[in-house]
Amino acid sequence: MVDTKKEQERDELHRAIWAIADELRGAVDGWDFKNYVLGTMFYRYISENLCNYINSGEVDAGNTDFDFAKMRDEDAEEARDGLVEEKGFFILPSELFCNVRANAVKDENLNETLERVFRHIEESAEGSEAESDFAGLFDDYDVNSNKLGSTVAKRNEKLVKLLNGVGEMNLGDVKDHSIDAFGDAYEYLMTMYASNAGKSGGEFFTPADVSELLTQLGTVGKTEINKVYDPACGSGSLLLKAEKILGKDAIRNGFYGQEINITTYNLCRINMFLHDVGFDKFNIACEDTLISPQHWDDEPFELIVSNPPYSIKWAGDENPLLINDPRFAPAGVLAPKSKADMAFIMHSLSWLASNGTAAIVCFPGIMYRGGAEQKIRKYLIDNNYVDCVIQLPSNLFFGTSIATCIMVMKKNKPDNKTLFIDATSECVKVTNNNKLTSENIERIVDVFAKREEVEHFAHLASYEEVSGNDYNLSVSTYVEAEDTREKIDIVKLNAEIKEIVAREQMLRDEIDKIIAEIEV
Image 1 (tube, rainbow, N blue to C red):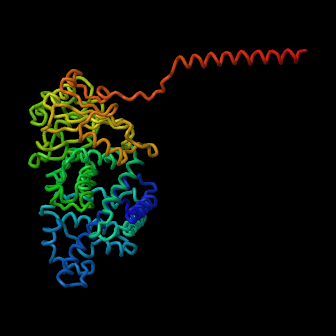
Image 2 (cartoon, rainbow, N blue to C red):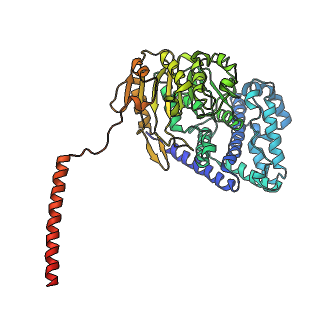
C-alpha cells in the first residue's frame, strides 16, 4: 500500500529542492550548482546529527533542558575527543548549521565563515579512524567562486539564500527518518541534474530503477550479505541500494567503492553520511581501479554491483605489469587499450566471493566483438563464471540512448549453462527516457531466479551451444524475437484486389455515361 503521507512529504521536499535550484542557479551551470546544494545539505545533516546525538544522551541522563547548540564553545571543547571517537567528527556550537544560518544575513564575511567552518570539520577528524572519510569533503564547495557572483557581497547573498533554502527544507527530525529525507533529497537532486546535464551529469549516476534491478539480481535468495562493492562507484547510488533492499543491518561489514573522479568521490562520501552510514561502515577510495585498486585487503565481496564507464581507454598491454596482475592474468590476455570494459569484468570476477554474485552493466559490443574480448569471453564461459546475460531496453540512462546489457557472474553455479534474457520490451516510456517499472523488474528477476525457458524472452543455453557460437554472448543470438508483424492471407488479399478492380471498372463506366450525357 502506498503511504500517502510519505508521498506528500516527498513531493513537498522535491518541490522545495527544485525551488532552491531554480532560484540559485541563474548563470551557474546546474551540474556545478549541485555541489553547493548537496554540500549545504550535508553541512545541515551532520550538524543536526551531532546535536541530536549529544542532546539525546543528556536527556537520557536526566538533563531534559540541555541543548548543545546553545552551549559556549569553550565548554563544548571538553567533549571533543570523545565525540570524534564515537561520531568521527566534531563541530563547535557556534559553527553548527543552525547558528551560522541565524547570523548569515548580518555576516559580511559569510564566505570566510563557511570556509573556516568547513576546514574545522575536516580537521576535527584528522588523526582519527574517520580521517579518510572527511578529508577534502568540502573541496568542491568554493565559497569564493565567481560562479556564485562577481563580488563578495553578491556571493554572500547567494550563500544566505542557499543556507535558508536548505534550512527550510522539511527534512524532519534526524532521528525520525520517515522518508529517509536527506538521502531521498540527494537522489532527487542527482536525478534532476543528471537528466538536465546529459553526458556530463548522467555518467555519474545510475538511475534508481536500474540500481534496483542490479541489486535484486545480486541478492536473490539472500537476506544478508557480508560486504557490497562497486569498482566504479560514482556517487554511490548503487552501493546504497543494497541497504534499501535488504535493510540497514543486513550488510554486515559495510560498503566499499572506488572512484577516479574527485568530485564524484566527494559526492559518494557525502551520500554515505546522508544515508546515515557510520564512518566505520564504509570505505570509498579515489584512484584508478584498473591500475591502482585500493581494496586488496578487503576483498572478496559477496555482492558486486557496477555500471562502469563504457569503452574508456586504459593502459592495457602498454603496461607490462598488468598481464601478470592476478586480476587479469587468468584470461591470458588483456582488454584492448581502447576499450577497458572487459578489464572491469575481470577485476570484478577476481574480487568476487565464492558464494557471491556480480551484476554489471555492460556496453553491448563486448558480447560479440572478436580479438582479445572474445578470448576473455572464452575464459569466462570455459570456467563457468557467466550466470546470465540480460539485454536491457534502450534509453534507460541519462545522456546515452544505447541499449545496454547486464552480465551476472557467479563462481559456484549449480549447472554449466548460461541464461539469456531479452528484456528489451520490459519498460515504460517517461518523457524522452524509458523506465523499468517494479513489474518489469519483478518479471526479469523472477525468470532469472527460476532459470526457466520462456518463449521469445529467456533461453537457457548449454556450454556446447555457447562455445558452438564462438562464445558470442549477445542475447539476440539465443532468444528469438517475437514476430509481431501482421500475418497476411495472400488468397484473401488477391480476392479483395480483384473486387476493387471490378468496382473501379464499374465506376469508370458510370463516369463515361455521365460525360456522354453532358456532351449531348
